Length: 173
Image 1 (cartoon, one colour):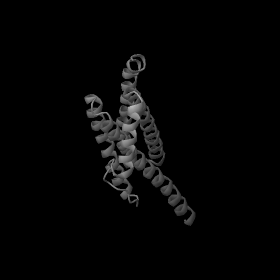
Image 2: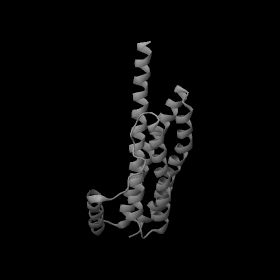
Image 3: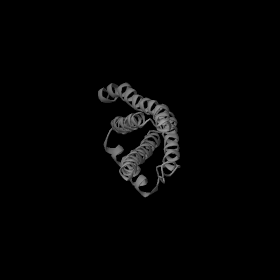
Image 4: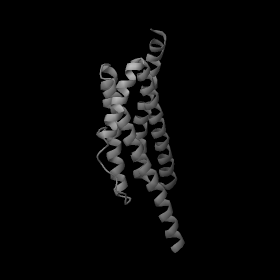
């Protein structure tokens, strides 16, 4: 009996670690999307779509915190907001870089970064989904099935926007 309880505890710790990592990664995706929106205010499509997509990840953070609480985790239900000294420094650095580099190249770099962030979050959702299926955990499975497709759409938007912009940015003077 003691061995069974220990195995359940170890398994629970692994699942908890996966939920915590996904919570951290979704917060990172919120920050990447809002940062992209802030840095590309002149491009209204990028600004508005990135902010809308950030809303999906903000909801994912809230839902992960709720699921985490039921598993004994203390996750912040309020998504991270870009801000503070580090964010200000990064924004100023970006502004300075913009003086030396084509703004279009910065957009491409931002979209590449966003795509990589979303791809990582997508893989984390896949790990959680497969884990939930193996454990027959319907709560985790529903969460992953609800949230993962939105993350895939975030990733696909970044890729599509990059493809749409790349040739024009790279070819024009």
